[in-house]
Structure formats: structure tokens, C-alpha cells
Length: 130
Figure 1 (cartoon, rainbow, N blue to C red):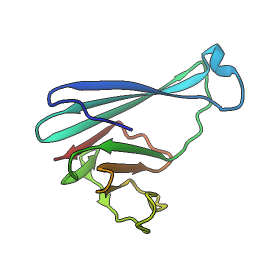
Figure 2: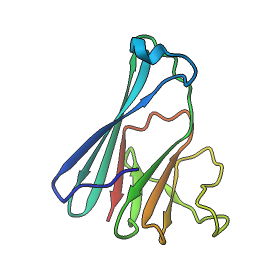
Figure 3: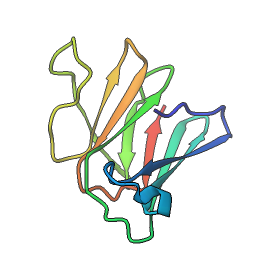
């Protein structure tokens, strides 16, 4: 989950990933996703960079960013291209459709913009236009 900071501020956090089975993480065998969020008056910019430590074997997987906002963005762009907004299949669930393309949806009840990135994804920059 990403909670954008105040306007003209930056927030950064790391997401650690290991194999989930061994204790290799104790030997610094893992992967980090460094996520940085910058808020501006007209947009929120999210940057994500991946770094592998000590030959960690990365398993490609889908990725979802949950961005908490006051209102739905006008658009979401990845690498300068707008991605498609989709509607929920079932109003009782918050799961995105299975797709092979990056998409986004707005959950008005929770005030969350969910951005789905299918595997393998090398996205490094996401821009949410306010």
C-alpha cells in the first residue's frame, strides 16, 4: 500500500522478497523493490527499482500497487502511455480481472487506486494524473 506524502514531499520504502521456504535471507539472498512516491500538485509519481542480492533467483509474478488517494485519478500512465481503467467484475470483491496488460481501477468506497502490473513487469515509473 502506498500513502502519498504531502505535496512536494517524497516517501520511500523497501519491499523485501525471498524464496519463502529457506533461511537464505539470513545470508542476504533476497530481492528488494525500492519504491519511491513523490506528490506534486497535479500528479503522484511512483518509481520502483528492483535489486537482487547474492544471486537470488527472481520468480516473475504479477504486482499490484494500492495507492490511497482522496479522489480517483484522471489517468494512470506507465512509461508515458495511458493504461486502461477497468471496472470491478463483482461489486463484492476488490480483485482485478486476470489480464496480460497493465490496468487500473478505482475503489470509491476505500479511496484506493489499484494498479495491476502483469508478470513479467519491468515498470519503473507510474504517474497518476490528479
